[in-house]
Every structure is written in C-alpha cells, then in structure tokens.
Image 1: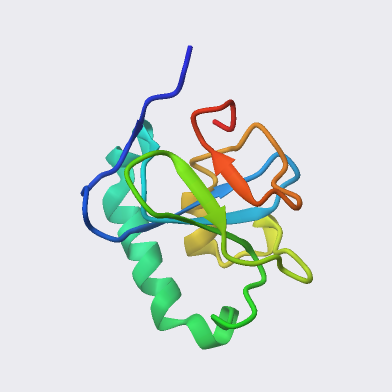
Image 2: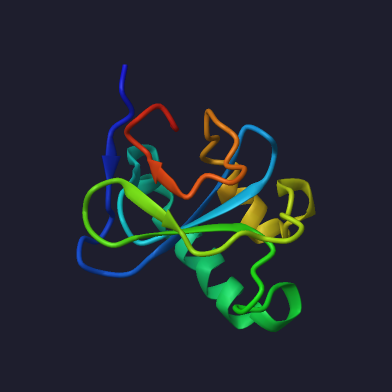
Length: 123
C-alpha cells in the first residue's frame, strides 16, 4: 500500500527530517511528507526552531553535514541542496532532531542521489 503524502500547511515553508536506510540524517525543506507526520507538526516545528537557533553550534548553512533536499512545489519531488563531506548519522544528531527524524524511516539509502521522488518507494 502506498504511503499518503501531505503538506501540513500548503504554501508555507517547513522543515522535516528522516533517517535513510543507512542510518544517515536527511533534512527535507517544504513539500509533502508522510501523512503520519501531521500528528507531530508541533514537535517538528519545535525541532526546526531549535535547529535555527542553534545553527552555528551544530551546523553551518554553507557546509551542511547532512543530506538536505528542497521541494519547489506540492509534488513529492525533492532536489539535493549539496553533498556533505561527512554525512551525519542519526545517532550523532542532536536529540531534538533525532527524535523527529526517527518518525520517518526511508526505504533506501540517500547516498549520492540528486532527486528524491517520495512517492516512488522511498517511504
């Protein structure tokens, strides 16, 4: 059965995280997410706020240590924002981020993938 994908607030920016099949942290910006995340939007928003406030201490926007993807519309298609030199494992992520990332386990390893179509077997 296919996973239902939805955006909690269409037209508004939001960040959410997942863990890939290799145990690496993946950040998604904007776009739809697995529907079960909508029950955790407050936790995800709090993690996003924490990440923004603590950005200098756990990562710098210019050299992301995690796989980061951005969606430019309402379709579940995400494009890579860069390849980390040393990707961050979920086990090494700050607890507030790791707890919400663990809510979505991807079925594949991100590796060097440049485009993720979430509706094509990723979740």
